Length: 263
Image 1 (cartoon, rainbow, N blue to C red):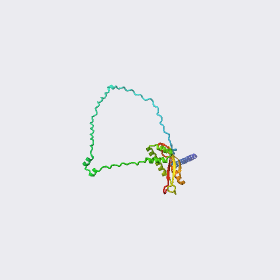
Image 2: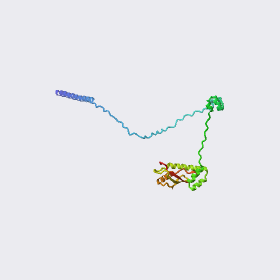
Image 3: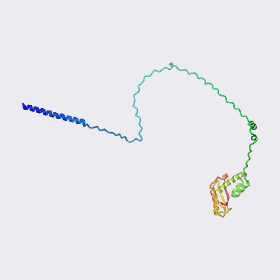
Image 4: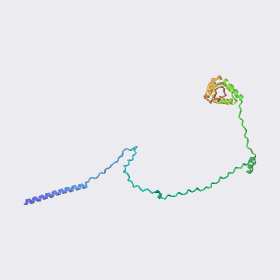
């Protein structure tokens, strides 16, 4: 009997001790979980966009959804137009008359004599007596027709001089002026060589075609100086093409080159 009591006490003590150990272990675990809770790590998310679209495609509108048949409203009864009172048109009133102003009568200016005007405005006597100066007629220089004909006949070929003799005085003067203009161009192009004796002379013949082209330039009378003759021919050749002669007729003419002092 005594052994059973002792064994029962020992069992209770062991059960009590084991239960206490279990309770202590559970309490330790709960405390460690409460104080050693893991911290939450924040999650950082980075948004990365795709490459930029250079030419985005235009958005097309979505097709409208098909709708059902609309509701049919009941038709209303038509009103009789005769029952509605129509407004009466007002009679058109005539536009008011506007009195247009009469144009003022313009009086014709009265002509006043200069003497009467000077007396009424008391002009000085010098002004009254002074008269406007008369313009002197200017006479144009006249060309000697005989000298013109003599120049053309002496400086043209025999065939051309016979043709000039049958021309009128006006035609001869026109042709003379044309050759004077050609001579002025030749004198402007002439470059006299240095060391030429004053009075050295050379004759150059050339032909002007109907189109004004200068050809057939040659020395008919030499000056005895090759450089002077060459300068005379170059002055004529430099003409090239001119205005066609009067009547567009070809002419063969000769001119004289005379050396100048200090040229």
